[in-house]
Image 1: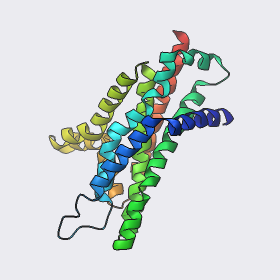
Image 2: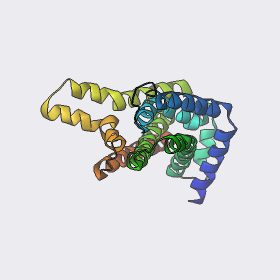
Image 3: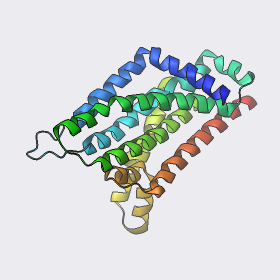
Image 4: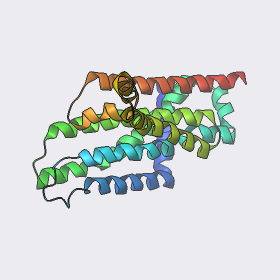
Length: 238
């Protein structure tokens, strides 16, 4: 655990000292705020964060690859990955350390959106249940998306390629499966609906905390982290 903390702490310092990270944070806040106020023009606006939660999941398709694209790709480009692999640090410790750093920065971004909740409480009487469940779902969604980004960053030394491939995978998982399921019926429609992120996140947005959805996001996260570790291990045999 000490090694994981050391790797994570180093990457967290880089995040908070990089102008790119703050640009990403600014974009997230601006776009998230736009979704939050999107229905204020309605005669009877709803006192909820549903619009923000749904919009944030779309933003994560771009945000997650942007936050993770350099984590391993930059190490490979600069050649420092070889020093890292020959040091007394295990592959899984490298992956988990870098992944945890991205999760910490993502949680920092979510913490900035807490003022949306304050505004709702001050000017309305929102139901707290969907807010709690929505944030839980968004955390799980983000963790899974970041795990996808870690994998694509591990597979290439080019940050742009890592970001584009990560974007493509998340686009398919987030929107592609929903489009496919809407065009089908019966068992196949249900299969593709359960395969993607959207169907599992929607319950959280409605205030429903289902253990099956939690297991889904945790499993996706574990799968992509496992693939990332295996991809990094394969470099030792090249």
